[in-house]
Image (tube, rainbow, N blue to C red):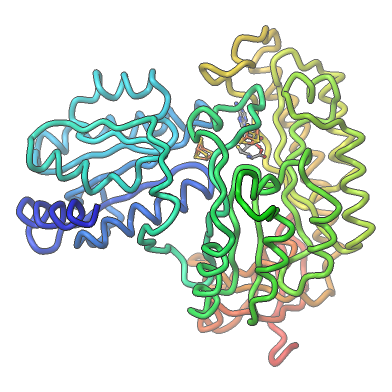
Length: 459
Ligand code: SAH
Ligand code: SF4
Ligand code: F3S
């Protein structure tokens, strides 16, 4: 592998000179963002610098998402737009990777209709990128590699992180749940967990380097540890991580309600570093729809989890994912989703209209409700959630919040920070605070965003 990487770096210099530049665009979830950081790590090791302009790049890569049709359409549009560039500058190399490429109909389409794409590789083949580039550079042919899920990429890849205060750390990859609407288990393979020691070392290193927030990633972090020796589970992993000394936060996503345990909430309640906030997707508030979705919990079970969490952490906030218009869902069933949203009062919701995915069970279910009708239900859900979010935000006016300052808003020059509950607060302050914690008094709630003023010297 080392030899392959070195040879690829030499071949890259021969083709593109001393300062080759790469354009890397990632779509989709944080898992993909984390993969993108590994891809950039490998490219950096090969001597690449990075550019935000595909026009200027020698190497162009799209790291794709397959979760909904809209995401796929954007990728085909953007990749298609590179055809002329490749004609003008044939030395440019174009690669497509990520979840879309693990679907055979997509890989076939890329092969046949996008001849200017040089490399296509799947979600388990990131570590092979330098080798694939070497093949293209030295043998003048296209390279395709999919369906490879070996362990090599779980550890030891260089990472070029996008942020300096927030970092993504992979806890596990893959998904075994096969929710009937979802493509992820098909494109990400089976669940595999990293060894706890490797995760602890990575987190320790990040905290020592000054990172203030670590988000542990997995499609279903609550099943972390399955298949590892030593009987470690996710709650146990969190307990160990929380012992690392320092001023930092640990978040995690995503939790599946079927595996979220009282033990997990207990660890959160007792921890020093885990915010009292959990992203717990419920998808639907109706039991028949949940069964059809193969979610393996009921509305009652979900609500009882919320109750347990609130008993242990009265200040806990929840965010969630919801699908509107699952095949066969009726308007009455959709009302159960609305009532659950009203009952729980999520601080934020990620809402999606059902999108059929080739090869999933739901894609072959009768789906009689029109897209137009689903769009109306969707708007109804958004209205309900906006009211709740606005109410939650109003309730915070006058409170003091410890925020992690993430950026300066280019438009108004205000700092933007995130509360423990993951809400965004805009406030005026010195740009030097970016990447640091600050205390802010919330002075105003505008819709579902917060404004505040810095409390200097606050503790
Ligand atoms: N592993 C996570 C979510 C992964 S995908 C979990 O189980 O919660 C992120 C979200 O996209 C899902 O929670 C779901 O709400 C949505 N989603 C997945 N497949 C979808 C589809 N076919 N159509 C619409 N939304 C979908
Ligand atoms: Fe998809 Fe369900 Fe797995 Fe989440 S748990 S990635 S929704 S199959
Ligand atoms: Fe998309 Fe793949 Fe994530 S399908 S949501 S990028 S796991």
